[in-house]
Length: 193
Image 1 (cartoon, one colour):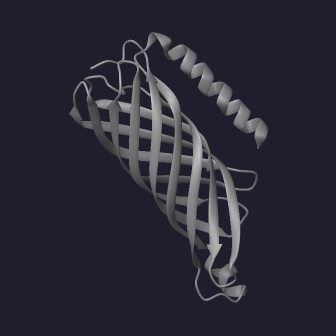
Image 2 (cartoon, one colour):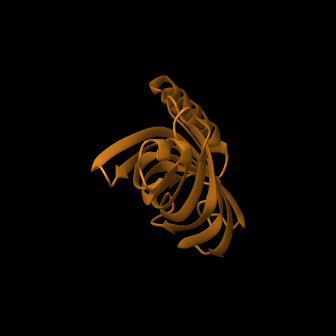
């Protein structure tokens, strides 16, 4: 797992170094969320439980690359590469479990407001996540706002809701959660309004 995360960080850094000639922003993000996790009905029923859904909390961090943080363009692409912990609360037993994953989120944004001080956009987010025994895909709507603190720095806020499915060896079936993502982005010279 650690080797995979290091490989993804190296790939991200290579993308960032190549982005110097492009108008982009790179930075770091943190995310929190809350949702539910559904288990496979056969496993859940055989374990003697009544409810196959459990509450989850998410916390994560990582790196972000955006192709149009401040530009006067309609379309932007945002790539998040990070690490998340999904905490699962089993209400009946007062037990917690944790799923740690590497996540790759891709946002395809459409700007609805652009100025020299802010950019507001919305669009779909696609997610790929994996850990030592889990793999899954997710999709959902996101709404983002980039606030330009200076010519070089922007603060970004993203709200969204993801629906994810698991293709793994565990008894997890699907997960959904609402999230808040905060980022600081350092813009290249070409990424100006």
